[in-house]
Length: 242
Image 1 (cartoon, helix red, strand yellow):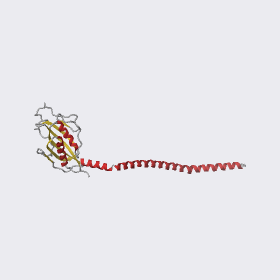
Image 2: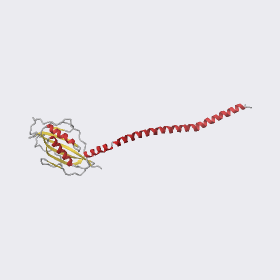
Image 3: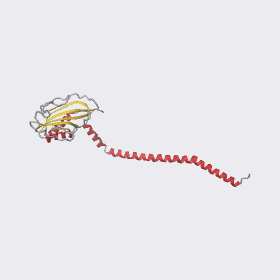
Image 4: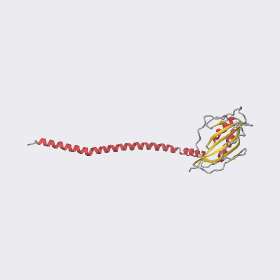
């Protein structure tokens, strides 16, 4: 059987094209796929670099205000110092009394104890008492009997154990300054005489104007012989961690 020469040449050409196509599939396609992967990686790196550039720009902007940040940190450290420095608290108390026209009778400091979160405040306060969440001091009910233990000046003292008894017009500092945890607090009890309920409220507000963070826990106001007798319990805080 004789096959025409042209047909043989055609078959050869088809085989050559098929081999070339197979070579392209085996070599060119993987190379193209790898190039696409490299392109995708490059785009991802570019997006990541863009994010880093934004972060760097933000850090450079923050660096411009590093002095302000350091001042803020230093101010916070002064509000909660690493040492008790209870004399600062007594100075704040004395200054607040002088600025508001309230007579300071005594101020005592208790022992340093582990810091504890404040319990939830009660929804209502009894007459003559205030919690510290912006509640105004209210005058006691004039109809209240003078022998009522809640308003009688001769009622038992509510000072916490560990406080010292101070003589009128003096301030004392409690013993037992040993640190008991990374964050500690010191209880302060103040007794004062205020000419008006407004002066008593101003005194409580003024305690927050000093360089130390002072938290008012409880205050009570009762009628006295020369005005209003005010008792305030507050906390000053100390951080002991490095």
